[in-house]
Length: 235
Image 1: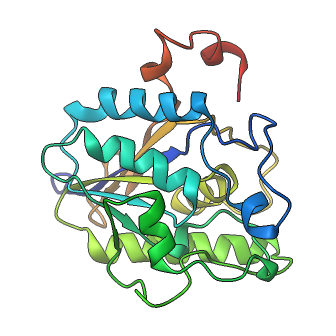
Image 2 (image 1 turned 135 degrees about the vertical axis):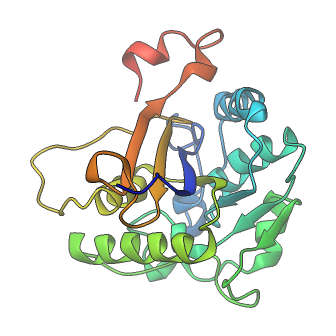
């Protein structure tokens, strides 16, 4: 059996607590409702995430184009030494954002995260939020698989990448990465700033015959000192 060759270490993160997660006002228009900012607690969660993962030298930090993901990724990037930029790509948008959301140009991404740049393959003049009316589970899974292909084509030399996205999107992403279907009889929880580590091996070299491994899921060790109760009760 060939020696294992790691092509990508991916740290998949759900954003910090948003204003809508906290039940705070977000505004009545479609953009404000679908694209809230972090709450004060969510911002602190993101800061703690960044402090804890400062020990991991990420090659890239990538986020969806939505405010809560951008803010979370920016706090992580501030505490990195190798990469202090956040790449934004609409492919990682939360599921279920309808076309009534309208357009979010890159200038507005930069307003939220001044350290942001368009990710490779993202149209810098396009919409940085992916919109789609009434997507089915099959459509969500198709986008998850497309996002995995995007990452695997970009990163295959052992890079460490943090990807900050959203609970529903992350669920389909993990199901796709592990070869599961949209009809599994279980769900997987993604708490605010929970981290799921996935390792992708070169085909045929993965341990125990599997080329994708989940190393841990929904880790929130970084919250233990300031938000210990959340580790037990809060999703």
